[in-house]
Length: 313
Image (cartoon, rainbow, N blue to C red; front, top):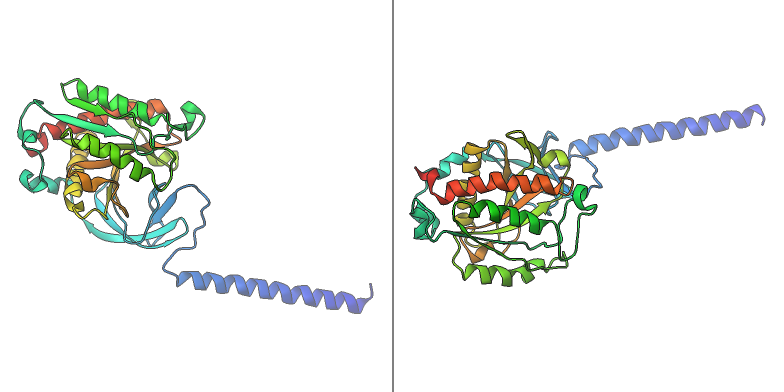
């Protein structure tokens, strides 16, 4: 190759290098002006960050603009933008979850029997919309059609609540497949349970998120944290949210850090059927079934505290 061709090639690659560097910095400046930080994610969960890029929440629940999240410290966020599986949220307000104890019980439309100091006629109903959900360390898979590990989690909670004499209705109905119509299928189950007049209606799930988001240790016991989910499309959402806040306040008092927070998402999750209906996410697929079952002892203590109305005393 003669000297002239070498000069041409060197000049060509030099110009190409300058163009690439210029494009890179222009892209950085462009991203700085976006309302959405340039984080890429190929995970099977959504990540919500604040405007500084700090992670607020990671969850398998689909996130939409205007969804809200009350975190462990009771900072209330609202989602302002969503791009792919990355979202940005800003602070809506900050208040103690214990403030909910100032709300008169009657305003929550709870059954009168909740005002009784014992468990006479007290009952809880449990079901599982996503009946396939399982825990990989235990079962080797995140999904077992019609017979997910989540049923055993519900059974563990049932057994804990029955100790002081609470009546528990635990539905073993399967609602597969795990698709957009699962809540339509589970609605029939929820309606049947509502007819029994329970004091709480619990739809127990398993989330999808990094293990670090849910793994915890309570009283030297490895366990999975719990997150409450409330549907904001429910016209009576505020009543369900008030009850969720009561449960979280009790958790904050008895087992600080156990309750991950309250996610307020698009949809109603069949909570329009009952004022004390809650959806509970117990751990992630990376937790073990034993950790999830251990959590039910702690969750049971929290629910007993609320059902006894001790959070009002």
